[in-house]
Image (cartoon, rainbow, N blue to C red; front, side, top):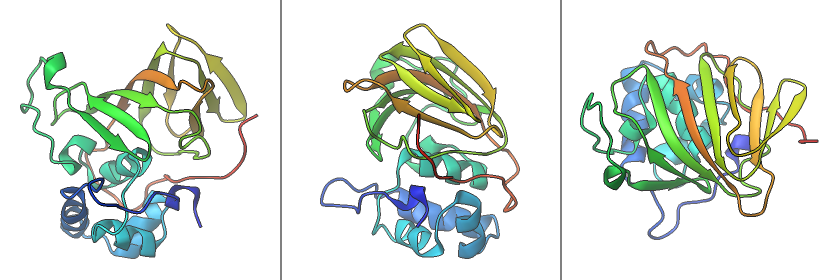
Length: 207
């Protein structure tokens, strides 16, 4: 089983009802088979099928991966209503969303070439997943300490530290402290969906 397959089953009241039909519709719109989309996202076809039928709840890394493959945003997958191309996002309009143990707030408008999020990552959540995909990522530590692995090098970042890197560099992040971490997170989106992405989880331990 891939590391990203380990997402909790959907339970009463904690499902994401908009996501399942959206995932299926977007995959079909892009012309990808279940097998091709699952391979690009680093998932098993059976697991992606369960996500599309609402039997499993996707984690935020899964949503990010699938959004890139389908050329859309996580907010669109979740059916969030941020005014299209509105330059201003007010704090009161940032509704929290939980996925795979992470809590994130949409911090930018949809329909752009980048997606901006404010993210809370609890200790021990998704720290074993390595991501590899086209694009760039930028993150800024607001609170707590971040353990960031880029390629073969581990970095410990504290409040005020930031990182900007090519997403084709294998990377993973985890909260160093039990209180978790608060991040500002920006990543580029692919505008042309393709089944031939270099994207998916790897295995290994953080030092």
